[in-house]
Image 1: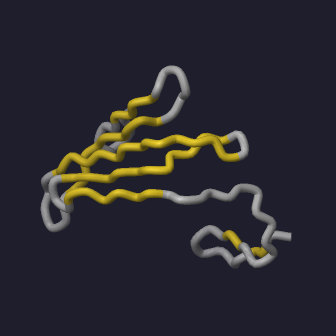
Image 2: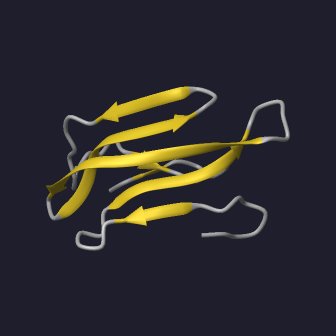
Length: 96
């Protein structure tokens, strides 16, 4: 995928499940005009209330190394009166 001034993005998708397997691109290195490759790998997909979620996400590049996020539990359709959402610069609206 490409668009505008953004660097190209490569997305690998499982042809049977539609799960995103990995995303690769290049990002600007802080304090430099050079770009470094980065990759995000999605694994261990599980179905939660009919939606498939990756329970392991690995982010890596040659500048910071690897960050592995392992998700233990996902909840959907949570009804909590204390939850709120807003766009930057707009007042917070409570869900009712």
